[in-house]
Length: 267
Image 1 (spheres, one colour):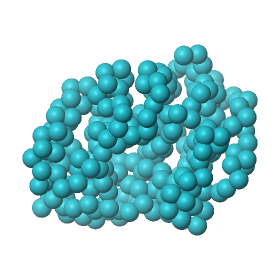
Image 2: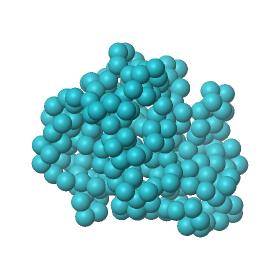
Image 3: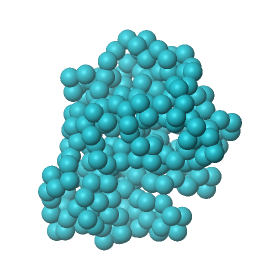
């Protein structure tokens, strides 16, 4: 894949803004506004906050479907690019002290070398370190070319971004994608997490995924954690990065600070 490599990364950071493609340059053509809520990802071993995931919301905090229902084939690319810039800008304004996880639409990417430059420029402009950015792709979204997705994710890693597969175990990629590409992070689908303490089958599956990821050097996040029992079970299985309502709901245009998360980590 042509474009950015570690050797020219510093040069790109210091350079003037890259010429953007039409989709990146005209975010206002979306015709609607949006903002973000940020949900923390907790490190249960320390009680600290590992990262915040940026979750799209309406401009007054309206739920995500009110915005996502307006995304279509024609504006998907512009929306994906606008989301990156807005998520970084808002996190920087909050002086977010943790890593920032941004969802991206794999089917919206068709000029990765330009899109990455636009993302780098947003990070540089707003003073958000590139090595604090995680890009996570939704495994549940059907990807027409999994090999292409693996190449895009490889490129992201070469730049210095962290990469994650979201909703692992729910969609169309799964273990086949892991064979082609090893992300930094795998996020377990919340359906695997729900009532895991009561389900021997879920525990066996998650234990297997955790062992595979450990061997491949991949961190695992359990998302959708709602009960103390689910949290304790995941930790017993060796998963200590946790996300869900047990710890905090998404905070509209806000982020959790160290010491603000209070929960009982074990039953």
